[in-house]
Amino acid sequence: MPTRTARTAWDGGFQDGTGQVELTSSGAATFDVSWPKRVADDNHDTTTPEELVGAAHSACFSMAFSKVLEDSGATPRSLDVTADVSFGPDPNGGMKITGIKLTVRGEAEGIDAAGFEEAAQAAKAGCPVSKALTGVDITLDATLETA
Figure 1: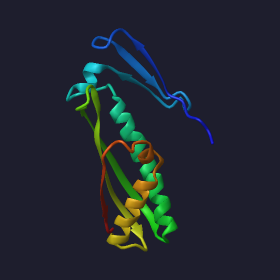
Figure 2 (figure 1 turned 180 degrees about the vertical axis):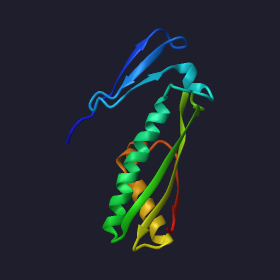
Figure 3 (figure 1 turned 90 degrees about the vertical axis):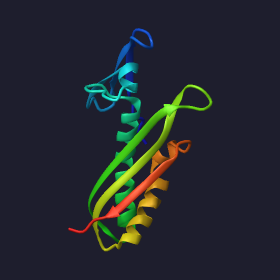
Figure 4 (figure 1 turned 45 degrees about the vertical axis):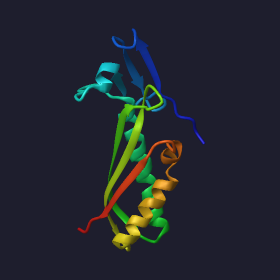
């Protein structure tokens, strides 16, 4: 299996420094990062590690969920997945990711709401990013929508 690479170039100190995160393997994008923007309510034009974790988690969960649905005999039509990643003080010192809330709204044929919820829980447990984040409280809100 392939290894994927991201790289950050950082200039300056902690409080006044800035960096750029590059999605090196794909070359798809480069994003600005900084500590002041990371902890600000408005981080316009600057991403954060937490936002990048959320992007990775929502993408991974979407793939895992569509597979679990198919494996159960359902036909996924659409999934809208949001990962809200919280960041705050660590009681043991420093900062940490304090929680992740996955929210999925989806349309699928051949499954009822209870089966959809069960499949979502299985996808959360099987998603490689969820497995990598086992030290973080991950909650799930899954709703099957009808067309």
